[in-house]
Image (cartoon, rainbow, N blue to C red; front, side, top):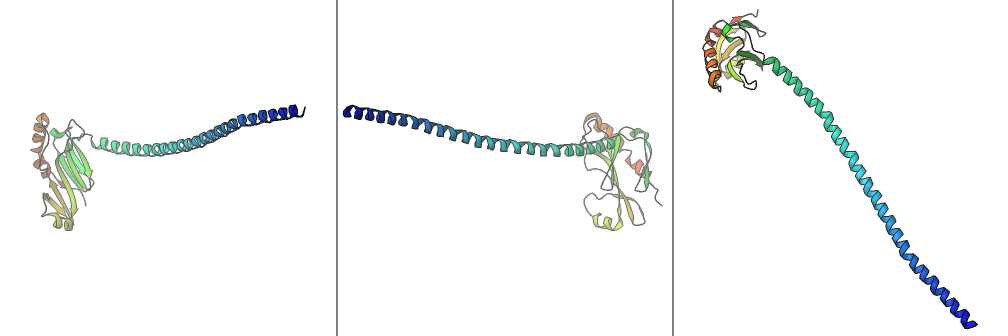
Length: 202
């Protein structure tokens, strides 16, 4: 009987040991699975962090774009206003002078003022073409003394007080075909326009 009890105890011990051994891999697998889930959670957090930063960058770009568009639209509107063709007849400038523009010029030129210089431009079919016919510039006599010996300084029309009134013409012409011929015909009338120059400033 003692031997039988001993065998039974040994068998129970063996069965218990096998059961514990079988459960250990499951525990390890469970721990491994938990670690994987934890890693996935961390990875998901990293991805979420990246997703949060991207919209902010996108929003920053989107906020700056309308300002750039507004600026572009404003410049474009100003450019369109300057591109309206001029008419023949009396032209008066805020700088204190007037010119008489021949009727032949109507619809064939436009006027732009940049840095206190008034440009009379050929109104080409392509609005991007910037071809000067002539320009008139008003500057102080002291400034003229510094620039008069430089390249293409212009020709004095008249002086008034401390102001010098100049006109100048371009050194070259880049038009072709019918526009080039039309430009040349207008250019022949420039001396006539300069002769019509009158001071309106007191």
